[in-house]
Length: 291
Image (cartoon, rainbow, N blue to C red; front, side, top):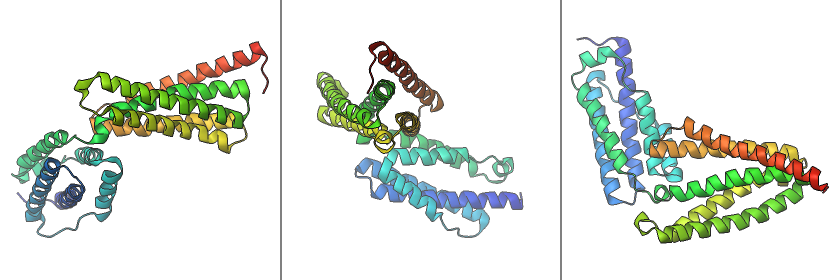
């Protein structure tokens, strides 16, 4: 069967994807310390180059890889982890999966190649053995507590005090104390659960550092802006952005639903902030506090 010009153009795009992903897997393998993970990545890179050769048989020409895409996923792997980078890439690849029926009938190798891609998914799932994912529960604990408790605290302080600097100082003191408390609680929790397979000290560190980093981000508008109400708006927007980014990271790395988890976490944080804002107003009125 003779392939049409549009089909050949689509094959050329697929050929470029294969050579690009071959280089991505190779580059990520170079920075992967675990020998098993590195071996699997190199094996998948070899399969990608074989797919490239299959597509080349039909196009009759070599195609250069997408260097920008290679560096993008390489940097993602270095900054956010191998698992996240690979899952993100594979998700994009699935979204651009072959949908041309003419290719299925014209290329006998195509079903086997699709089976290879399915096998890639299973092997990639088995690669999830990064420290940052082992301690994701501790990160979630620190992030959730900081967002829920601190958006509420800052909202309540905003109406009760109405002075950005005082709110920032009070919030920082509260946040540092709370981060130490959360880290200590996570340490004791991990010590009591010997089957977790994680280090209590590392779990406490991840919880504490996530909490204090979130607190610093939420307090920042109160240090930069004179109006506490404008600062609160920026704080709430920042909280939603943090929830969005972190939920997206977990959803990709752990193959979890994104929108439902994002909506749930955002609703809880903003709901607590609204309730605390009203409580701050009531305290100010009932106690006749003016700062």
